[in-house]
Amino acid sequence: MSRGRLPERASGLDRRTQVHHLSHAHVQMARELGMNPKKLGTLDNHGQEFWKLPLPEFIEHLYFKRFGKRRPNVVVSIEERARMEEDKKALKREMGRPRAGDDVQG
View 1: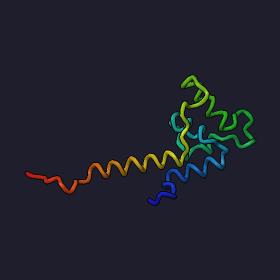
View 2 (view 1 turned 60 degrees about the vertical axis):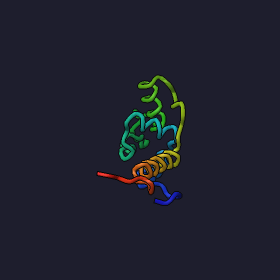
View 3 (view 1 turned 180 degrees about the horizontal axis):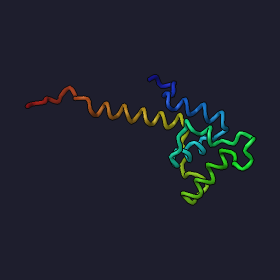
């Protein structure tokens, strides 16, 4: 994966945030609540369901109910999270690779 592209999982989530008008904080709150990003459309108010809150307000309400605070302490964007995961994978690969000076004896 090149440095400039998002993984498929994150890019799909990025498209959904644009459709549902979610900020990075809302996405992170939804992830911490365990919401499935593919199912956000079913939770969204489509204008006809007057009893439903708009999705960003609904996420904020559930987050406050569960964690007792309005926003996460540190907000990490989708791109930043993908970059951190990629760096972590690269570090694991590097740690697992045998070094030139190491001899494995059986």
